[in-house]
Length: 623
Ligand SMILES: CC(C)C[C@H](N)C(=O)N1CCC[C@H]1C(=O)O
Image 1 (cartoon, rainbow, N blue to C red):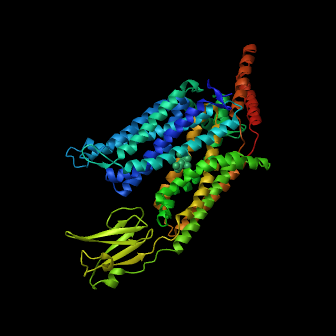
Image 2 (image 1 turned 30 degrees about the horizontal axis):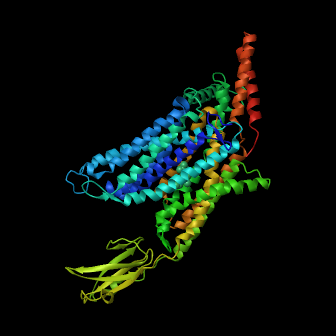
Image 3 (image 1 turned 120 degrees about the vertical axis):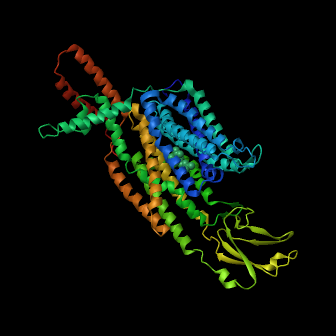
């Protein structure tokens, strides 16, 4: 049985259907908007690459920092349900603000197709992004924890499946939106003049966020809504502060040691609260090495995409752009999560191996390290086949009656005069006044040519004989398909690390701090992002393959540390511990009523010993 008033379908509370659909729409909204954001900065707001990149990464990092705020509000004040509703409204307003900020007609009073007051568009879009960061980050830990809350005590298996489906929805939504919003952006729209349609590319994610909110509200009557238990975070901070102060005051050897430094708060604070803080601190301590995983993971969008630009994306009927390779990650998630859950994990269990969550996370980290070794091997291949400069054309041919122009081949068809985006045949028109002639040739992906046009060219005749194409840079010869193994390993790693981590954070959190621990988990993603930013600034390793190997080695080192920490971690059942504490407190209350006047100090001591016993009994399983 689930915990809410929800019907149960195939052992699952129906209420979680609304939660996973909400997550799907929300992730569509978030990743869809993110997919076109840098281009919006660059082409609509006319920012340079550096400013666009910095603001983009700051926004992403903010989205993974605000979960702390959302979690505190949810666990201490509003509860998860209300927090999700209120912050979803903030989020939707932010998305609408983005869509409106991208309507160039609003300030285009001279109707020339460009906004007249860029300040208006910049301010509105920054306000929009701030609201989105607050909304998406704020609700993220709450939605996952709220989903977990819907399951009863004996529904561990169902809850694990829920977190897998939840992850599938994240990636289903993001995959769909990263395909759709760039298409919407490429449309032309406008009242007075036609421009690239950023307003539509932001408008559809805004609409999806409204759908997410509506779906969540529809499920309202079915949810189990745990009530927040007062300002828990303030209590936690005060309790930790008191324990530290009290320990310091009793630092002399004459005072007997206590089992845990948090036990120094026993004189003033509830033992249940102390036990709950111990649970949270143990998990947070375990999180310390985790950002390194995300540091490697997040380089898909930077280093790996740059690597793809030096590769051949011609897949026959399909020409894949370097940044499109990133969609391999959500596609693989959609295939690997069901395979892991229904095949690999049960098989491992059948072999008699106890593949605990922390072991899974450790293996996930190792797989990510292997992914970077694969990336290094691909890089070595690229370096070996590195394009050599075949000619210094101008010097060889200058003064011989030629005019020349240079051309670089990037991908996809475009009529630009000096950059051709195609690997097939391209046709150029040479014009002089009203006269013209055409020249066509085949190009390879990533190649560069210098075209020499004979000064004897006669328009009207065939250009073909009057143009000489000289290959300066060879086409990319290493195929983008070679990146698939690295994507496979990083995604398999993500499934083991991230899906498990999400569930682990929920199952090991005390009931009143579920969202807080989810936020702690998301905080590791934020730190990972920051490390990428710092490394991008500082890394001065000349060989890219060596940098990949360095990251792989760092993750292996961190993984060893994590596995040692994990070995000493004992799994707990917070519900059981909390129930025992509550039972004992009730018993003591009864005792106190029957035996008034007992010495208080003695009682505190006895309680403390009992509580330790209960805590120890409930924390038995190792890594
Ligand atoms: C980058 C992909 C589109 C999404 C990724 N596989 C993923 O699910 N996540 C990356 C950070 C955590 C998680 C998410 O919640 O978005």
